[in-house]
Amino acid sequence: MAYSTPRGTRDLMPEQALLLEDVLDKVRLVFRKYGYEPIETPAFEELEVLEKKSGEEVRKQIFRVGEGEKLGLRFDLTVPLARVVAGNASLPKPFKRYHISRVWRHEEPQKGRFREFYQADIDIVGSAGMECEAELLACAKEALEAVGLEHLEIRVNNRKILDAMFAKLGLKAGAMQIFRALDKLEKLGAEAVEQDLRSLGLNAGEVDALMKFASMKGSNDEKLAFVEKNFGAAKEGAAETRELLALLAEYGVKAELDLSLVRGLDYYTGPVFEIGAGGPLSSAEERGPFPLGRKEGGIGSIAAGGRYDDLIGLYCGKAVPATGISLGIERLMELLKGKAKRVTRVYVAAAKDEYRNEARKIVVKLRKAGIPAQVDLMGRKLGKQFEYANAMGIPYAIIVGEREIKEGKVTLRNMKSGEEKMLSLDEAVKELS
Image (cartoon, rainbow, N blue to C red; front, top):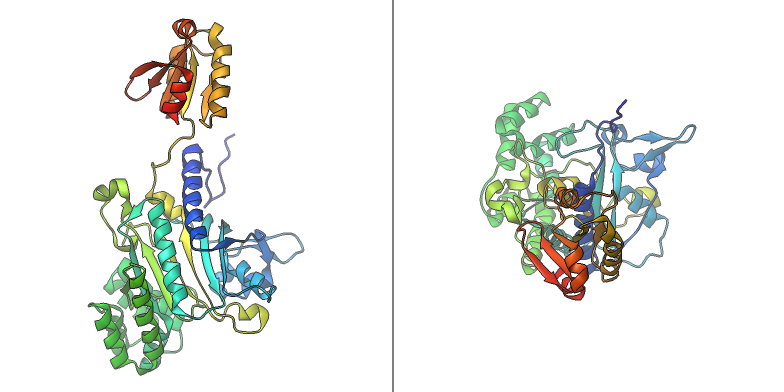
């Protein structure tokens, strides 16, 4: 009987696992370059800790574990951070941490969305300044570029602007459902969103006002001028947005103010943001850019976050400003599919059985020189050894036979072109390094 993985999970075979490791290594290096340091927390938390973050929507996503214990698998990496900060009041501020690990959500799997998946988060705790958001977005953009993405698009909004718009329209009940409907504007289109808004009990005038607001086109300055003119209570949110856009420009980062951008969770208090990409560098022309990947058939945003100044206070009883961004690793891997490089650099093939001892000696020397190398473990003939090397995507082979033994050299073969060179082992090492 063949067993499969649980629904919403997957096995990563070597090519995918290598891609994952490569992505995480490159992201981690960029995070560290910006001064973020790692923390590690348990995979499961007390249910009371997990349930403090949000309402019923989040509670439904928790995988409960343990008999007789109220425990659940973490559904993101922000809740553990909030618990850690609340329990360590003496941490120097700002506290800049990164956390790269698995999380679990009990929800319906979709394209590019699993129930077990990786997140790569950076957060800044202790500062309310827009410098934090600017640095987070610059760092996340550089990390995404480091793994090979381009056509990056950054979109920002501010929950204070949204709240002011809602207040003017007198919309209080069902605000989060309205937010979520607006957030689907680019993916589903205006007609579907208008229908959703009407189903929430909004009248025609309210729907028209919301759609005009969320669909507004123009430059960032034009949108901010519209907000400031029509929603007086949005003054603080507009000022924060202007400052953030100016700071991003100092980093050489472009961003667009998107008044439909909401983010789905309830706890954001200020700026919110998303990053999307068109595709990997080597195939950008083939794939073409898709704005944020949010359109039907797209992969979705690949990084998102915002300011959550009230969250940590739920755990320690006092306000602690904080902001962060999370990179969706599975979505990155989907965009980079087929770009992994195999580990083994060279396969040492013995022409006949009597040369296997020499082949093993050469493998040992190659490995000591830092060159990933393999040798036959199956007692195969030379042709079958080449077949294996090709199947594994190994770019080079070193052949050991009678002629090589007599001359004290090896034959270095390029497995793709078939070109061969007779070299000393030291010369082969230099060429492979």
